[in-house]
Each structure stands twice: as structure tokens, then as C-alpha cells.
Length: 278
Image 1 (spheres, helix red, strand yellow):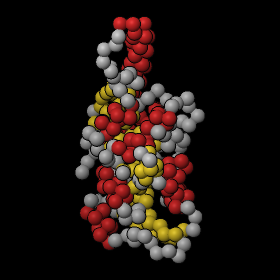
Image 2 (cartoon, one colour):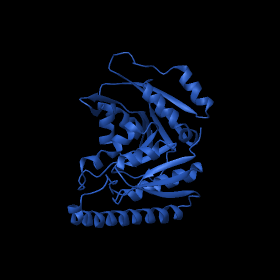
Image 3 (tube, helix red, strand yellow):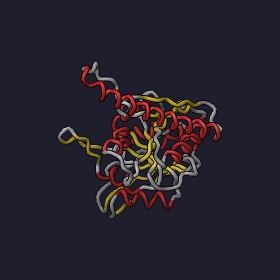
Image 4 (tube, rainbow, N blue to C red):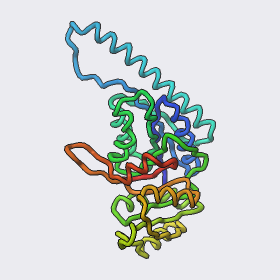
């Protein structure tokens, strides 16, 4: 398993530069092709318009031209940045329609998707603010999420795995195997609450499986009385980790996807990139 193709979501926000640089360094490390996804924001045509809509159509065309030119600028900046970082293979794809659909489509044709959290203070609609969550839930593979704050100079060379033995955790680790193989330090952390027995103790097969993939992993099983998210972040800080790999969870309630408590808390508090799969 390799990272032959990495996709990164691009926009005109200030966080896009850090996201581009991180994805480009990761692509260079793994010899990956890097695809920059640029949603234009231009709506797909819904069919013929009535004759009396000519004025509205003219306004729509002008708006579409503006959005497309802005997307072309984002793509141009991406190409310049990536070329300067020494990536061997890359391109930028401008895609009309709903941004999340464009991101998900490219994610499903890539080995890894890199997205970022939107700035909570920016003037964005709810769809844009939740794009990273929707991508994580719909991509069908590993998604690496860069938080809105933090420094990302190191590229995943000290990794902490948050392990509970569940399906999502296993999917996340499997998707991150190429990154884990290249890391200089990998620690698998399994937590239990208070005096309760561990929900899923680390099986010897897990260590052997990782070792067969060339991952020299250290197992850390411990107990906490604090929240799982806070304890994981404290352990990541103590380990000087620069990437957390964990499963993502959600509940379906009245046709709305709702992230699990630990997942949402980590996404809200972490200043480290998170690699998740659902």
C-alpha cells in the first residue's frame, strides 16, 4: 500500500497556504501525485431559462465569470507554491457544482484527502464551515484534517494512534499505513476510564500486523479519569507527536449526521493534524 495519489482541497482562505505546503511536502516524501481540488462555486446549469429571465441570466453569467476567475487564481497560486516546494507530479482541477461533491469525488479516486477546518470567524455559510466534516464522513478513505490553528512544519514523522480496537480505528490505521511506515516514532495509545476494564485491549495481533508492514510501534495502555479527548491530546503533547491517527464516529439522527463526542471534541481542540476514516 502506497500513497500514489493525494488530493488537497483548495480555496481562497488564509489557511489554504499552510494546507498546500503540508500536502506538497507529504507528496514529495511519498513520491505521490498531488491534485489540488478547486471548487469554483459555479452552479451547474439546471436547464433552459424562460425568455423573461434574460436580465437575471446576464447577472448569473457575470457572477459565474467572477467565480471562475477567482478559482483560476487559486489554481495558479497552488501551482506556483507546489512547484517551489519541489513536488514532481501535480495538477489543479477546477470543478463546478457543490464544493463538497467535488471534494468527495476526488477523494474517492485518491489514497488520501487533505482538508482544513474553516475559520469560525470567517464569513462562510454553514456548508463551507462543515465541508471537512462532510468530507470525512463521505470520502470512503482516510482524510487528513489540518486544524485552523497550529504549526505544521513537520510532516507526520511522530505519530500517535488513538486505538480502541473498533472498525473505524482499524480503517484509519490501514489508510495511514504508508505514513506510519515513514514515521520515526509511532505510539499506539489505548485508554480506559477509571476502574472500568478496557473496552478493547490491544491484541498481540495488532502489534504483529503493524510490524509486518514495517511499522515499529510502541504500545501505551493507560487509565484516565478525564475526558478521552483531553487525555489523548495530553498524551500527544507528551509524545511530541505531530499527527494523530484515529477513527471517526457519527450518529444518524433525523437524517442529520452528528459526530460522536470524542471526535467532535478532538476536532474542536486539537492543534495537530488528525488522520481519520469513517
